[in-house]
Length: 255
Image (cartoon, rainbow, N blue to C red; front, side, top):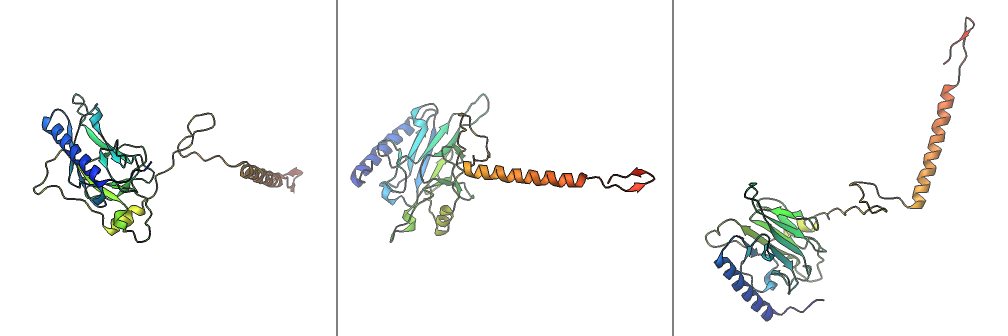
């Protein structure tokens, strides 16, 4: 169900969330501080100030849920093109003994897709339900696919935000990301991710790249064409194997 956007309620929720996150950060402890800076298309998200989260591996706070779900989304948007549950940002626990540092990933769980861009990089569409590691400063855009209605600004179709962690804020604060018209066109042109292979009839997943099963009529035609081709090859082989008798001293040379 879709609930009407209430700016007063949303603003109050944003203030409460900001205070709660500030308290978590102040308490410190083992965790990862992540700052989300809202950009283009976020004007209707209520409070557009940077949001700070303290993620702790192995606990409930390790995931930031992104979407329009006003009961579960820690990063809440009102943009109707954003899915109810659109994406997640997750802190994965590392291992000090094995020298593995914690990492942050983003995962698209939406209907219309998400994209990310590393510092100095190009836009890349995220495969659905796949955790993709991101670096501090990555910019996320959602959705990839959106229809522009008559009279609607293309800039409002998509939402973007930057994710920072493991570094101090620069003097003057984090810059708000934006999407140029060229980038909006680039996002719209991103190819859809490949569709996962369907499992075989016996329940065993099909091998990657396996050919799809042909319809019965098409398969029968292909089998018939193959038999005709085999008969033609056999006839040609018999023709070539015929003996050509040439008399030479009472013997025969078989050609």
